[in-house]
Image (tube, rainbow over all chains, first blue to last red; front, side, top):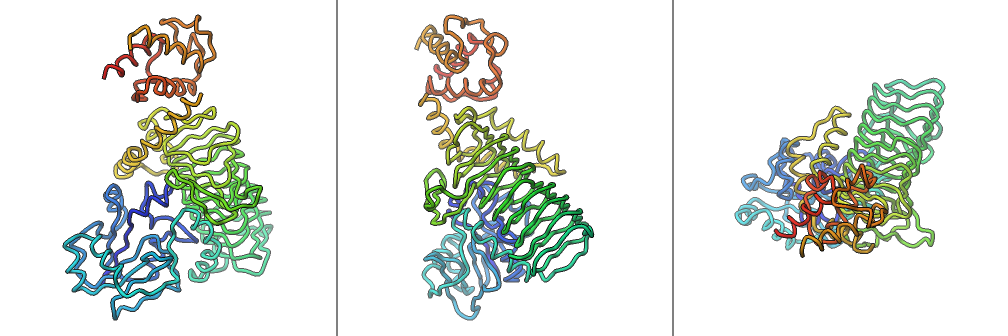
Length: 417
Length: 81
């Protein structure tokens, strides 16, 4: 049997954080969605199906065939890359069936004869066939929108800590640091918890991965995962339900948020119920609201249109390589595209198209894509990373597909004056 | 649109964005040295010219334009395309 992890046109509902990565690279708990699928389902023969412009990038990252029709020649378990797979995942390989979550196909098992019959017309044809199979409801959730990752994070962290099966102290833990609470802690080799740091496990476990540094006076509440090489700055208040890293620097207050990796929120300021992409830099005192003053549900712009999250608490969704100035204040449920440059100035809009500069209360195109890519290379170089040609191509494609909405906002800014 | 009309509208936009009286703006005026444009205001000028003339300029090239007269030339070229 082979496994196919795929994405459909629904990737657009996960923008801006899905613009430059496949949906299955988004993170919840300690793992990305693809790590969960691979680790849980354990079918070695795996293939991937992604949108065309990500194809080369994904090929460069994984040892699996990507968008390869010749792979579709066996019994297949196909699974939507947005599925949040955990130990509850189940399927029966004896007979064909389709498992649905929220009225949407989550995964399906298809026998070889039907795979061969439909594969000639492409993977989409297999998907169409799967939708008509005998239907079973599943508890495996589909992550439709960015805020789903944030809202599920605490529970997944608790489950992941158990499934990871690690506890105890392998790294350095100062005898003047404190573990307070009933739940477990794991401190990996190479990690260093300085004096006067507090790990509060009353609400859940704390997992500190290798080479993490926790500086004095930082307080970390479980459940929490701090990824490899991350630094938690002095005095930081890392509240419950955070996934951070790898290689982030985080200070100030952070609550129930996911930071994909390589991002900085170095200074004071509150960020809560947020999803932050890679290589984001939040200037000092950058703060987001995650609760409205009238306690109504938060709406978030998805691909330029407002969507009611149904949740009272949602913070900012911030795309990769975006930077904010000192003192930036984001309204509740703000969506910021990739590679934006936002400077503070009064109450900010709730939607920022990708690649905009927001200065003096106006949307602008900044110094152009060439300069933005130069900046991205410089930022990545500071962390010993390079922008690959495949990644640059994806950024250029995203620039192209977001051009129209960007132009609308820039023009509106200046026509209104 | 003739060159005189373009120049008149360019000066109006420059005056609005940089807060300089229109009569003090000449073709030879340099955005940074004479009119005091900061880097962020250069971005505003590019966006405001695009909105005023309903054109889309290439940012890198637009930001190389140093004087009001050269901006008129630059915009005139786009309007002819």
